[in-house]
Image 1 (tube, rainbow, N blue to C red):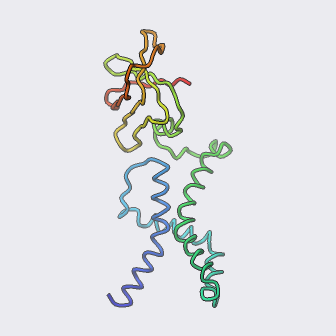
Image 2 (image 1 turned 60 degrees about the horizontal axis):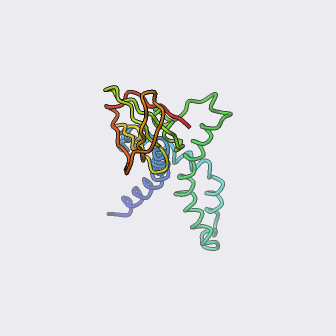
Image 3 (image 1 turned 90 degrees about the horizontal axis):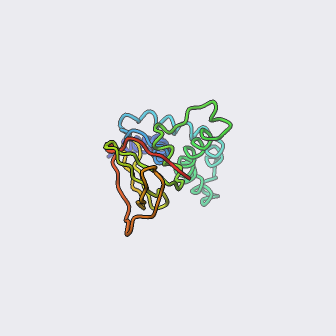
Length: 194
């Protein structure tokens, strides 16, 4: 690899990596389709440019003559902030702004599916799961319970199964319950109770 090719690789990583990191962090918080990064190349570069624009004051400061030799620790910490820390923070900040009560009236919620919204809150609930075959299962959805997120097939793991009567009133916990796994193709409806 000659020096020109090395420069191209460095330029590519400089322009691509901060945006790539932001896109990956965003997808950790907001479920969505599996991203094909070969098609998200321009989007990643766009986010990198926004990152560099927001941090231009820091970039200009650390590029002043003699700064990198006179303040090596600050210089390398600044590079870490520019290329990793802020690209991780931007999606978190944007998501929280979009979810804020003041702005939520004017913006769309970034969470695509109500399934992901309700289960993403990680609140404990008593649930009645109505199956397509007419059966109703009562259970506890709490800290040890899990649900899948979009775009994966929807599944619920209830950490405890409870007996319910014909009216849907909870009775006692099923003895020695280890939980229950339910698949979307079996579920007609889910009711939540505090």
